[in-house]
Image (tube, rainbow, N blue to C red; front, side, top):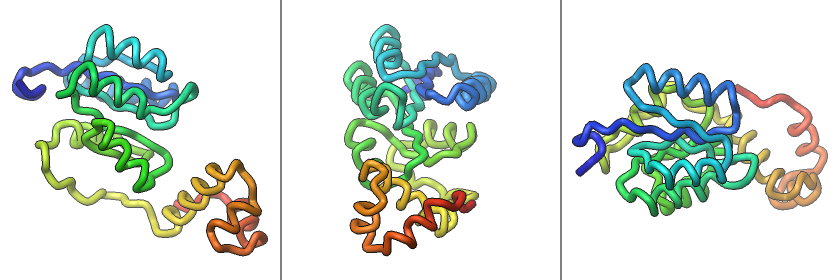
Length: 180
């Protein structure tokens, strides 16, 4: 029986940003969910096994590891759980991995409760609506550069080489604030 049909509205929120986690928990409780929270992979896996939720919102990058480990645990303990992955680094490879692990959607931060609710309640196979406030092209470029820089261990020369960019140009980009 599907989660919407059974009326079960248990929701696990796994997020290490405390203010965001608390705001999201209050917002989802106001929308009729019975919310449980966790801030680490270890804590989330314990909660998922104790009481497998019908729904979950999982941050990709947690202090003690990768949120995909939580998605995998949720999928193993409750295959029909509807899981949405949140991340500050929106890239295609991670989105594909999240879906392979059992997530139904992948939402870049900042996400609001309505975006998350829409993703959780979407009919299986439904095409998502285009975002109201998509990232600008400059922001997408900046996110990509930051991600490659992080993956290269904050090595400017290696990042510049992989991005086929002059090292000084990359340094100027990294010194600026993120675009909106």
